[in-house]
Image 1 (cartoon, helix red, strand yellow):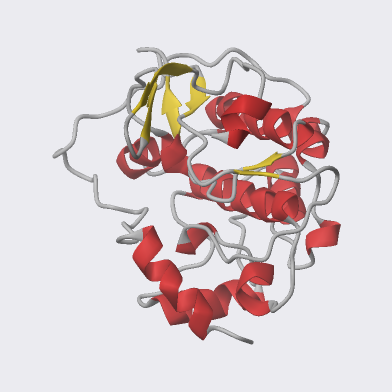
Image 2 (cartoon, helix red, strand yellow):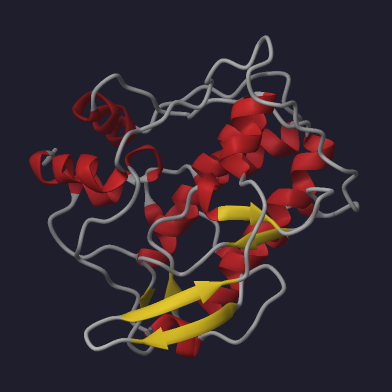
Length: 249
């Protein structure tokens, strides 16, 4: 509960609706959301930049707010951002599950945590501590790439092959993306954590210089033609993360 106590309210972070304290557990209930960003990409394949820029800006603003108050999210992924309205124009970070409150100004984590497709190379390869904020930025980069391209930047049929590709850090950005969008993706998915933009720096990037109010994002119903799963299900993220301990490259 520490991250919730430390974090002031923000328009892009779901508020706690109710807390029930049991004999052994504490149950936290949040404002209900609509469908999430992961579902949006699976159904539409790619989101045009004109719409994606406003959505990603809200994702970045939520992360900025968390980082400014010493909260590292550790498990950023499209699925955790839900729509708060029918028009699918306002996003909410669904919850702070898996988030960690940093002690003072020290940004140093040691546990290996995150969803396989979104985890940073430093988490896979280092034995010592790593920057939680920089790891969040890598995950945001994966989310942005997936939003604009319709698939993950790093893919593998098995966790070990996926992790190997992430550690190498090589990916291809489609030429049909704007130069500014390509630049932002590359600024986030840098193998060296110290070279990545900060969350606040993302908001200053030229791609986010203008943030138009998005029109309603039309989502086709499931089951229609051409709705193949371009963003694959990764299975249980927690189960697959056990493979992290086997990677030491």
